Every structure is written in C-alpha cells, then in structure tokens.
Image (cartoon, rainbow, N blue to C red; front, side, top):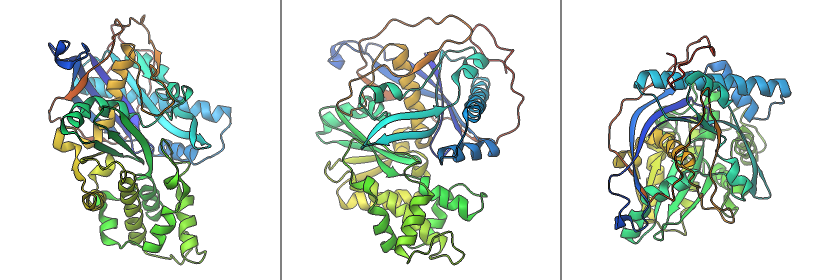
Length: 440
C-alpha cells in the first residue's frame, strides 16, 4: 500500500510531503514473530518540503500566538490551509510518479489545550475535503483527538512508531532505547525492554530559538541555520537557570505542551527577571543575540537529557529539524555521554531525521485504514483507532481489519528531497481523475 503523508510542525517551516510504500514482510506472520501478526517494511519513495506562502505562514503563527479571529477568520484560515495541503499533495503525486492509496494529513497545529497538567483538546487546521477532492484519494486527518478523548495526551504520536521500530532491539539488548524528535517542541520516547513505551514532550525544541532569530532578523531568517549563532555565542548561566525554573520542566509525565506555552513571552520574561527588568525587546539589549541563542540551545539540550535521567537508556536516537543543527546535537551528546548514553542521528539507521515524522504519519494511516488501534503509552488512555476519514469523490472501501503488527523495519534507501519555495498557484477543484489519481 502506498501512503502519502502531509504535515507541518509547530514551527510552521513548511509542508513536509512524503510517499511511503508499506507492505507486510513475506512470511512474517509465522511463529517467528511470536504473535502471528505480520511485520511491516516501510520503503521511503519520495520526500520534499514545500514552503508556506510567507503571508499565510504569518497568519498561522499569529493564530498560534493567540490572535483573536472571528468565525469567518477561522473558516478562511482552515480553508486556505486545506487548499495549500492539497496543492502540496498533488505536487508529491506528480513528482513521485505514484498514485497513493491513502493520504494522511496531520494539518497545522495552532493550539494544544492543556489544563491541570493534561491535554483537554487540540486544534489542527487544514480542511481535508480539499485534499480528497483535489487528489481523488481518501484522506485521514484529525489524528490526535481520539487519544485525548480516551484520557491520553494526544502526543507524542511517535511512541507507537518507536515501539514497533525499536522494541525488539531493546528486548535483545536488555536495556532501554530512547529517541528524541527535535521539532518546534521536543518529545522523547523511552522504549523499554518489555516493549512498552513512555513518551512525553520535554519542552522547547527549536521553537524559542526560531522566534528569537526571526525577531532579531526582522523576519529575514526563521531559524539558526547550521547553529551558527549558537556557535558564536556563550551560554548565560543565570538566564539558563531562570528558563529552567519554568514549571513545565518539573511537572510529572506524561505531559504535553506547545507554542502557546513556550513563546517569546517566556523568553522576554526570563530576560527581564535576569537583567533587572530590562526586556529583551528594549533598545539596550541585555545580551548579544548570539548569547541568547546559545542559551536557548543549551536549554533544549539540557531539558531533553534531564528528562532521561531516571531511565538510563543505552542510546538516544535524534531526529527532527533540530538534529540538523550540529551545535544542538553536540550539546545533547555532551550531556548524554556524561550519563553513559550514546547519541546518534536517525540517519545512522537509514532514516532521514527530517522525515521521520512523515514516515510515522504514513504508518499511522496504514494502521487506521486496517482498523488497528494505536497506543501512545499514556495511562489511563486505552488504544484507539485514530483519525477521521474523508472518502473523496469515490466510495470508500476499507481493507479487512487486522489483529496487530509485530514490528517495523525501514528499507535503507537514499532518496533525494528538496525544499520547494512557494509560488502562487491557481487552486482548481473541478478537475480530478476518478480512478484515484491527481490532476497535475
């Protein structure tokens, strides 16, 4: 089965598009797995990132920051995002030369509602009907709410992927394996020797670094490319201590968070508290921007490794956009090594760190289409089949439900991916191939 996944992270850097072939491994339903359930092989076929149109990205970030919108404003925003996701899907279908059986669209998170230490709701925008209509392919969306309704956090979704990918290795090694996805928010997964996974958000990944760089550059830059600013700066220990005093870091897991918790206000308040109430936005900057970025980079590294203190995993596997920042990765490695934890990029295991989430969403779609519940590991939530299906222009035929999946392997295959700058495209909804293909 071929699945096309679409997702834009909390940093709203762009729409990640991936095409993945997911097939049972021949003979894997035998007693070798011990469960009679098949093992799956995931083969990445195509990956790219389509930049958001700058004005639309600005509206996404404003909405996520709490800008007041009326009903019409929310309707226009989710519609425009849906059309942008649809155009990205069409591009992926055309450039990959494949016709997917399913599109999975995570959408764009604009709010993750946490109250009394637990998620109560979450909002991802990007109306899926536009994608289904434009591609002629059924679309799975809204993949987090079923877990929240069942008592979970709706995050991190990566838990179920890592359980299948790394569970057997942890059992064989007799020691837990950890992963961290360094997106806007950082989330860790601890895969135990019993195959169970503990997963939660540790706090900021790239989000605070990104917003400081964007403000300092007046919007010309959206992130610390190559970690150059952090490399040029020095960590301010007093400011770091203030930032680490944020109550989220001391809250017990499972827990989840988002941009609504870690935003520029957190940075400005910490700077003001550290430098005698002189806000970072004042004309007389309390410290050079390179020092501020270095300190925020250290905050992410320290909070990620501190979250693993009691688990003592053998290895920490890093993915996400932050794994491409050599300074952040080096700081994580230094703190982890001091605790006896080896650090590596998911690239060492044949999995592009920029597209691990894309593979996870593709696998989640495969699960939902086959009626398989997903357990994210946060008690008291029970496993649920995640997401909602939009059939598209043709009747929806579901495959026979399966009892389970034993494990997942990733086909080690190098694929070329690139970032595509936005260009204005006329949206058309009156053309599609009814056989499930997409109009170029």
